[in-house]
Image (cartoon, rainbow, N blue to C red; front, side):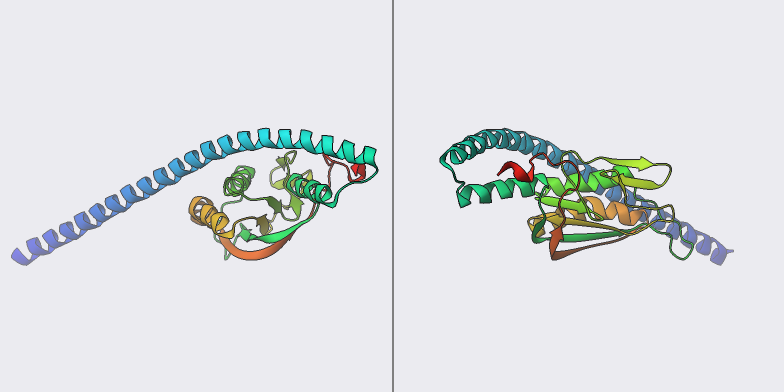
Length: 229
């Protein structure tokens, strides 16, 4: 009888220990998720403030460049420095190809070994793009589609994602390749801390690597036409 009681107490003690450990881990998970959410909100506020200031700066710079361009046209020539600066703005607007140091993100949401894997929704895709923008990305593409101010990311039917009105997925799924040019450390830090853990929890295969990347230009209607200069 004594051995049976001792065994029962041991089992109860082990169960309590497991529950306490599980409770501690659950609490830690909640705290970590709250920290990630707080970091995301802080990043969003900071990005919004920076984007507002940057937008005002770009508007002022656009006016100045337009005045310089008109003056140069009247004088019968355009300075190389002005052309170079206009090209830089075209790169930011997505109307020219971009090449530079950045990262390559690969996301595979296809089912593997009959194991359920959550699909990459348009909400997740938009959030990843915004996170990369928060990290200072100068140019971004998704499966070859350049992300610009006018880019739309929508769901067609039940499973096909359209980026710039171009299908980038199909019903049985396809790996996603997201390219971003910018500070590699910042881009990796933001993505790995804010987005990758969530995607991995859903069972997706995720990698992010430093690389010199080439991002194609936006193929839609460009805000600045090539014939302007």
